[in-house]
Length: 56
Ligand code: FES
Image (cartoon, rainbow, N blue to C red; front, side, top):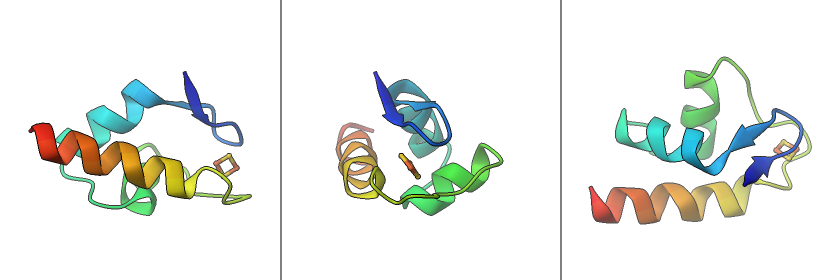
């Protein structure tokens, strides 16, 4: 599933970024060489990172 349409970031990419230490959406996006644009995805991205951190 694509989470961030602007950057074509998928849920699995976000989970991988979270496992590599990203604690916020902006950290995760920076890891992938991009950053939030429209911002619509940020709250959902934050939830995904949170759940990934909880299961790590
Ligand atoms: S959908 Fe992620 S910045 Fe627009």
